[in-house]
View 1: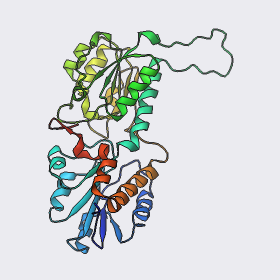
View 2 (view 1 turned 90 degrees about the horizontal axis):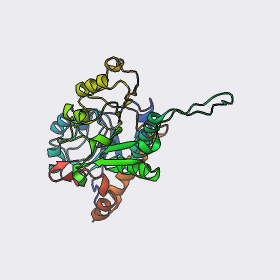
View 3 (view 1 turned 45 degrees about the vertical axis):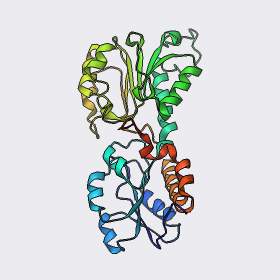
View 4 (view 1 turned 30 degrees about the vertical axis):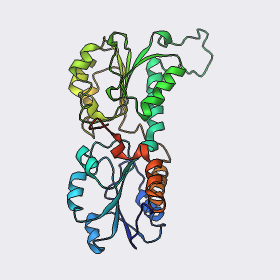
Length: 325
């Protein structure tokens, strides 16, 4: 038996879109998803009242969707599939994921390469910016950190952390990994010169970088965080920054967004961006293609085939030792 919808009418509810998406994103998305026969794309939950109670329903959410409120309003509806085309999913509670009787498919694959490359760019910049010039420089100097003295702590060995570790290994950098869920728990903090945060946010990782963490580091360690803002206790980070004026700090995500960057401006080597590590020129179309493919496969493939194909993206499969990681 096919996994997908047997009803005559399929409703797709898309209550939110991310801020970085283009002005005509909804129109393009609606056209693409409604190209499937008997599919209706709606933006507001109140519009569901216009359709039969037993209509099959697909939800598409973002990291800003109030999923708790949405779930309450959907209690009398039959949700068949939930697509969350983001890599961060901390607004989907562990209890909700565990108890859901439909697949929740996330979008790590959409942004993984972009966030990985953002991390690499920040890391290489921290080593020393390339001194480009418009004329020949006879001194041929490059004020770059010693490559054989750099030691990196990678926090998180998921999709992106694995790629970043492969980059470090291929370039012969010394590195350590901190990821309790993958068995990496022992760290020699005295060696660390750069910390790259690439883990997901869950109950065990919130404020993972706190006063206790920073107390283990030597002075002037570089910090790179393109992952989730609440992984770092910003008050603790600011204390560390004040004690380490020569550290280089790269932050793309923050505890509260939008963030007031002013509080970081005292530091001479602060580098801030507005949650754009995973953004690139054609991301809108990549998101739509992902959604279309997931829905099409869900409708037209066997349940076992669908679950095997999307195993790494089905959120329930990310529950390890009772924790959604």
